[in-house]
Length: 220
Ligand code: C5P
Image (cartoon, rainbow, N blue to C red; front, top):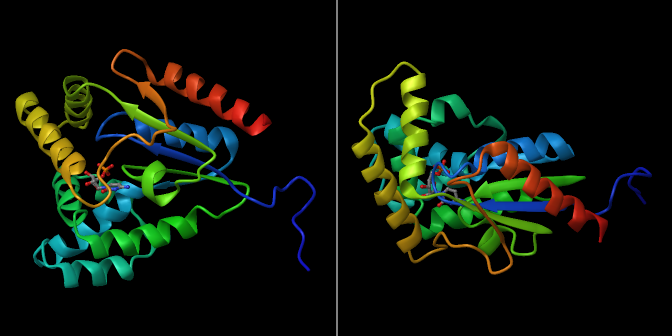
């Protein structure tokens, strides 16, 4: 029988991070993954990859059978963050994300990812509520729509591109509405999630807050 090496736990420590667009959850997840040596999956990229594949082939985003086929054949080891981070791909992602069959296929792949030792961090919209309801620690990271739009605006301008703040704010509000209002797995905090509001908190403070909560949970 195979036994894990001495210091390797036999069960992964799973951290779930949810929150709306531009809340800072991705940055937090990446820093925590580095700190604890855990595998990290940005589940938004999985929805983005489905949207991108359809857009690229000039296929409609709202045809469930096409979108489900793409989702079922997605390779999680091949998600190109810089390619998929484009604004219009985020919009396409939130359109395909309302299709139940797409969610079922992606959730299955995300759950498989979560089983890696010694631990995993998944960030998204429904990790603590649907994908990993038994996660060891859950966070819900949020910030006001104005603060989140400001962050997106700065990101775009820093890349040397032009942006209109009001358009970004409107898109953020539209995306929140779509993510929070959909029937299947709407965005909402899990009952046992720790809330982190980054409206007035920098990433370092958010990181230290989350790290302390994780260390405490690991000691139990
Ligand atoms: O986080 P990101 O902006 O990359 O997500 C893109 C879209 O994918 C979200 O607006 C949401 O509609 C969808 N999504 C989701 N469930 C997740 C992650 C993302 O529905 N776990």
